[in-house]
Image 1 (cartoon, rainbow, N blue to C red):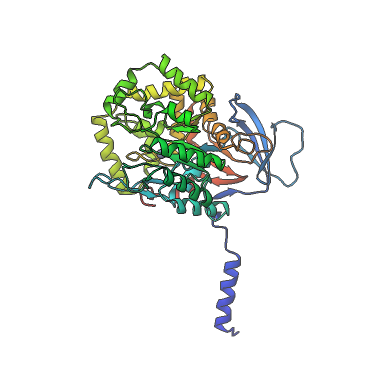
Image 2: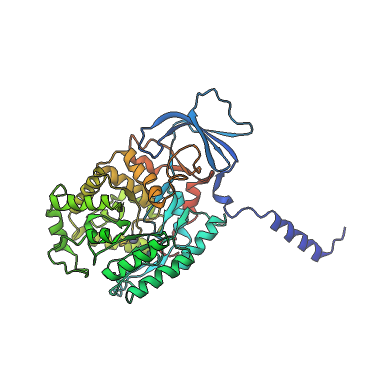
Length: 478
Ligand SMILES: [Zn+2]
């Protein structure tokens, strides 16, 4: 039989494109429109105690019902039923300090500090780690972040629901050329207005912003119902709270207001001496308690970033805890990480600083403050998207929170700040089916938070391992 070759080729090409699987297909394990997660332990993210042997019914991407697995209610017809005996389901994490970049390889060689956008690996690793919603908390590449969000939302790329923070609002004196340096309040206003119009839904002020620039940026953001967070230095926490800031990153260890070497409006050389002074203070003492009261009464949230903070203490995290994440690093980034880690081990910050920050976070929550969490994959490396979020939760437990509280901090609390707690952040009937299936019980042993098997985003179950395997060796590069 003779078939015209060109026609055959065209036919093959057309049928191939018609059958083209979704670009997400290699990572999707469950996508039945009617799905039952049966015999699961639920830690719902609200702070409630775990409930054993439950059944969660997911319909069209939402949580339909939650009931005991032995309930007599018939299962929906045509539902796919997964027997998940022994597994724990927690809400998808709402990560609040989830940059889409990482230190570029060899940052030390010429003294420059640069970052590479992890357009490829960060979204997958966040999702693989259980982060289903991620606020980017400052960007070095706003258009890439915004375009990635569009692609992820359109189902063309795997990743969490991104909430894009605009470019850093940094004043003169930025430590990296990846940041624009504001030239004054007008520039702050223009930057906020422009990027809000482009799609940024929050902003982050940075260390050298002037008090006037900060005030102007907050006013312009609030005029658009957009919130502002900050990793501040030139402006103290109390002053920023009075200016109306909505969130402060990292916690007390970056607050300069108690430092004897502080000049108003300027970021001091906030090094060893300043931290020595700080850790001599008492978190139960009048000054810090007054600060906490101010933050709570002004509804200023704090983002806990203990995973990045611990890397500045000697030999932390323990290498056994790092081994999973290291496989995702580019070889040069891995070498850089170990080189700096060994330098840090020689002249590290005392662990007292980490403990001090932990104690502050506990006091803040005790006083009614909204504590959230994020991984912050920066510093000298070693904190990776997703992996770092899990480590942060483990460190919250080391800080004295219960596993249940730590999970709430990393899920529902972030959703509250985002104003999205009616649809995400907890395992509640009617909310989106953003869920993490763990092969163990984190309430018994918080390290089980690392045993992610499946991550559901809007009811679609992603294979954590497939996502991680797809970006091996990419972190640091792209
Ligand atoms: Zn950051």
